[in-house]
Figure (cartoon, rainbow, N blue to C red):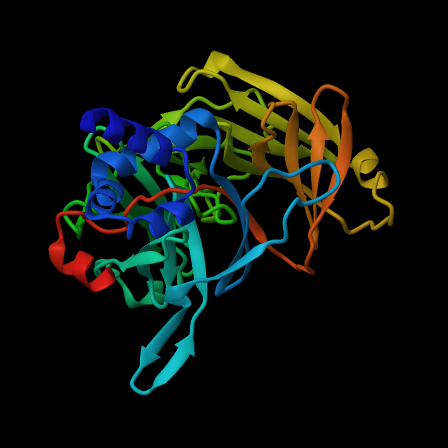
Length: 402
């Protein structure tokens, strides 16, 4: 009878949100030990993924604050006002003074956010349990001139070894003269493992016959199928030392399990596009491409298979903009990489304080207005979970955070 009772308790608790589970830890020692166990944390995460529940839309509205919406959007707006969440790493006590620092979100995976703050310091943070873990200092840069450089970073989960990892890439140029003629590029790459709680250098990937120069306006890796992805161009210089223009871009991937780089086949997109963006759309690798005021969305239906790329939609940005009540020539439209629950609509980001549902079948759009005023923002879809930002076996860290 006791076993049946315990099974029913587990089955019920697995369906509850994190906020309720944290409160129920004080019901009994059995409930506390159960909710804190790795078995339950993993089961709760998988239950949420399988049932498509406990997902939040997170908006970073400033360097030290997020807003969270815990319910799905409807056609008219948000069903519930946004919940503001302070980013704890953005406030650091130095001596007797508390200072605020700019904090950037590198990526989101299974409810954990990887953040960067100060001078390339990193932390893992679960905004739902309010627990965070500052990572050890990353290896020092090879050259002082890189102090003002921006790294390419990725955050992901190695499901084979059950460990979260952070990747940092610095691209270093060795110029022969002031014009970078005959420049040589080298990638300084290091990986952090949460299980080992340490960083290590890894070997450069040769990228075939050429090195690749990552696209600087998309320095955050897109995590799909156990790997982070970036758009990159072959680094080929002309006789004057400048990069050859018009080269075909590639998709460079870093697999967190084997800690190796590879290239992924790209779609048959227009290589002269105005801009490209790579993202995760419903668990699939996707490319957003803008060409002559038209936005194309490409989706790779079978990971790693070039022939599986399909063009999901072609969107005329001029006609899309005209659907807004107030005409604004400076408005922009950018996919957020999120499907509606029924999979019929795609969420689109616009500037200032609106989002838009785009109906893929009917080719129509509906504006979602925020209940608060927001300027520029970044949007993330984040799973609500109990996942720990520290190694469960590290008793010292666990004791400090409890």
